[in-house]
Image (cartoon, rainbow, N blue to C red; front, side, top):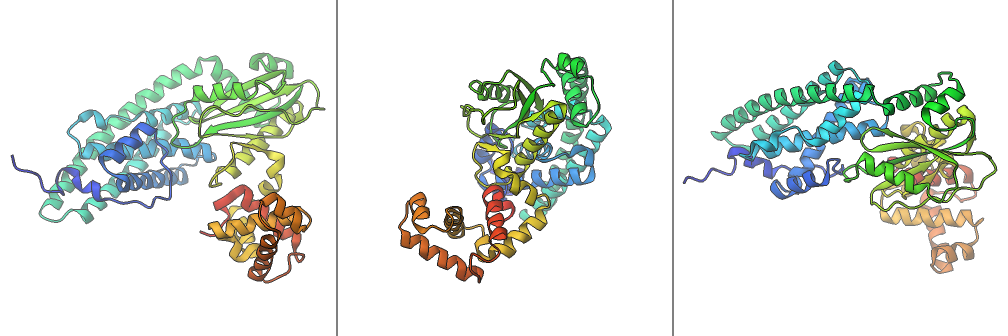
Length: 431
């Protein structure tokens, strides 16, 4: 038996490398399989292509956007389809080229969001063109003649057939989900919630009956989502949401799935005079929760949800967010980061070298933030940081030298910049 050269039959895919900038969004079994079969470099390459596909699709088709959750849902599907295609190109197993579950999950979300099928198919065509171009460009670079032409032809023919099947399967799944969704009680509740959030006037009593949730009370809204690439399903998230509230003391709750990887939650109280409720930590890894402030009536239903969403948008960019974020703890950072480009420029201007996304800069930021929070008490800051008083003094002097001014100058702006780095992380730091 003659052994194929290393470039033939897609083996060149094993030599691909990516940037490593983006964490995989696909389900763990697919990520593990690609890493085992193709290697970590090729996995990073496929993740990069999936990210580019999602970014381009949303830029071209605004209806498919709508914040980080919409982007993550789309990226999960584009990335998975790229990784499946790469596996198929090095495999004789035709089942590896079937439509991945991640893409079907996103397809169902599009149906639930009432994004027209022709728009979804347009997005598929845009994504396919990027994936095909990326694979063919890579083949033309990685494979030497005389095998290059043969390999590019094989890749092109397979992609053409696969994407034809892909579009047909996605169309059938979309229509099936559309039929299921429009006749469900969940759809009625989701559409009513969407109308309320859009500001459409509603009869409070009738809407409360439909939702099974009292709109005339005080509300605290939560957004619960899973980190891209984690294995939790929408059902898992709903279970986590219910457990979160087990010890909260709320009188009622409403849970509405949003996208493939998050749920929106509201809790109600008869009185607005309550302390911050106790929430039970999730028993699954990769779960994140943001909470708005307590607010009354239908307007409060909207306001608290908007706050929770804004907090979620902020902490999604943090490199290692805590599992629970309260809006009133990050409100200043949310307001300051409404324009990411301006926020990044503000942080860079105020912090200077301390705006670097490095461990030494982070240590200095933590020290000086604690020092200022202790009203410039070296002893208190040292106690909190568990370091010597002289260590705090040394770091403070170093910070003042690096930024070129006394910390008493522009203290408000400096502390605001520090607060932004604590909440938004790498989004506002210099890479």
